[in-house]
View 1 (cartoon, protein in one colour):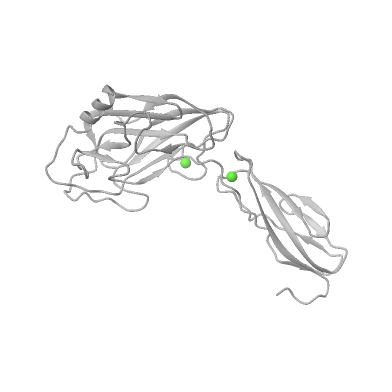
View 2 (view 1 turned 90 degrees about the vertical axis):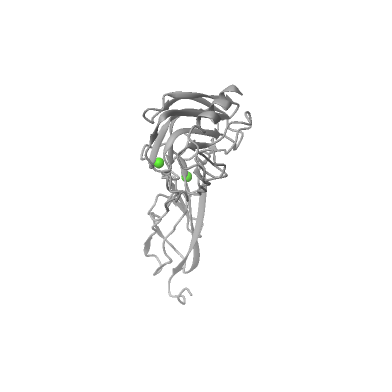
Length: 283
Ligand SMILES: [Ca+2]
Ligand SMILES: [Ca+2]
């Protein structure tokens, strides 16, 4: 409780008289070191992931913020809560390293179950912009885990996700709070399913080979895919571009199932019409 009081006091050092509402800040997580958030950012199952925490103090995903009192969206402290709250996955929070220069004041922090709260600050205002706040080690046990920002803590009613700034915010305490002053966050989600694209439609004379093309299939996480085809005549094959020859004229439905290597493993199936021989054209 004492630590959280210190956070509130520290984030309220600079007071201004005029109200300043803002709704355009963005906090996100990055695990592949490219400095941006995408579906490729995930916790490694049964392993330790270095999770980078980023904050844009003066923009949301795509547009700038405006402080109505024209005070800058500077930064002199931050506080965030992360929670692994999906699929009953167990996580272990490890070392956190602050990356903002001059933020040598440690507001403490707290781990409670699958939740962690961390706060840092310093006396010098940093210019508005994009900051890598720091890096947190997160270890998952034997399950696929997620990690989400939370506006408030389950374990500590005084902890919050936000940052101290010269722009005073809706509460006029020079603290911009997630869920009050701004809303854009991107945590780490479990696996996303791939999309199967079997190409086609296909047609060929009887007994002529057809090259099926599933290369346009994709996975939003960038997972490698395996390909399984069912040609509709009882035959099957693996691979992105198998060749198959039908022995009987007619219409068939060829289906492609792609499977990723994510956690949990996910699949997607799509089918395409096939015309063999001199039948009328496929509508
Ligand atoms: Ca990334
Ligand atoms: Ca995937």
